[in-house]
Image 1 (cartoon, rainbow, N blue to C red):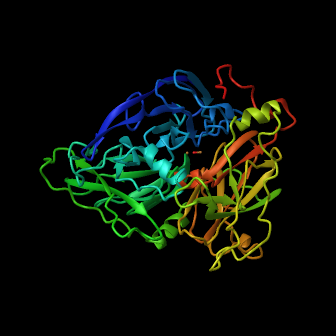
Image 2: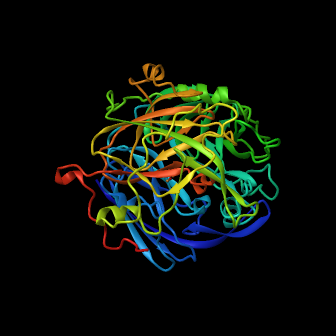
Image 3: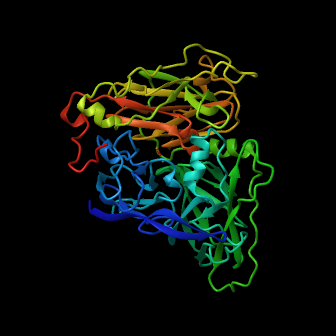
Length: 531
Ligand code: C2O
């Protein structure tokens, strides 16, 4: 295994899109930021130096960080922020993982512009479990705001209003030629007729589930969240913020130019979606004057497509799916309204798990846990809501009043956990992509309506469930996941829609140390930032 070193300089750079130039926070002046390349088993040493006037942390989304939460990155969960003028070195191994992951800022909404790909190749000499591609490319799907992202965040968070939507989606930071001033901000992928390409697709958008398709071409899904899948062919994919999807693309159509496109999936679509980003699949030798063909994307509210797509995701060779469960957790997802004297309307939107809106601490939870500092958090997150109710009934008032708290769940080392996330039907209709730090989990079941403990577990897929780090909880439905708690530390779990995270749709687990010396959290690095 090799040691791969990277230098990340956090700098503010002026970037222009859609005829608007504005300063944005970047890594090394690049948007999106640099790709990190490694092979399975390598050690990554990334020194982050913060030259900007913002606090910063970087999260390596999907890297398990075995016993090494110090390198995980979520601000005030595993570390204090890297302050302006300071540095911190993230030092970690990519063990037992290969495929596409990504990195992003994990403080406020800065991940809007501070993100990039992580490509973990198999060990030297180990082939992919699918036909060797001729070439590979990363496609980072994102968003662009003409206004300042900080202002957008303030609107959603401090003022208690719904935040502005972004002005365009982007593919590798570029909106494509359908937008004004954007001819030169168009990503193009050149392909040779007859060859096969591996596309590593990442959804780095703040708040949008996305569809993606390429005109005239099918895509063969081979991997999700750095876990191989049984291959299946589709004309479009759906991908939630936080997720990655690898697809094989065969350049087997008549040589030409084809649009690739991405736009939102929403259960209740906004009247006009004018944010569709396009990029170009360019067959070698075809003149750039040829007009590109346009792809057919699923309709913006095509939930049937999404359900069918998710049902096709199966692990290629599932590891140890927990067949028995030591610990059952049932969390309701609520969106409601909380009083807020300082807000514009006197109220703010609040989100909760089991009616608890998570309050960010002032110091990092992992440090408080490691050193036994009292008074930072409580270890009493309830395993289920205080009382059962008709979660998806209408009208629903059972989760209107949320309580605030920095309350964590505690899990015994190496126990097997089943967590059912149940959406509730209040105020908003939106699916929630849930991300668990420090783990991959198996998605054993999903359904619409109320989870029924007497019937639904019988239908769980314990044979080849997809293994992920981020999973969608369908609107008015539920998702069941299982994992073995073999990674001690403090691990964040949250909705990866940034606006919901801000409203409190998050919590953290303390996974206790085991009894053996190699079953406890490693000591913190010397340069760990202090609060
Ligand atoms: Cu990709 Cu906690 O995040």
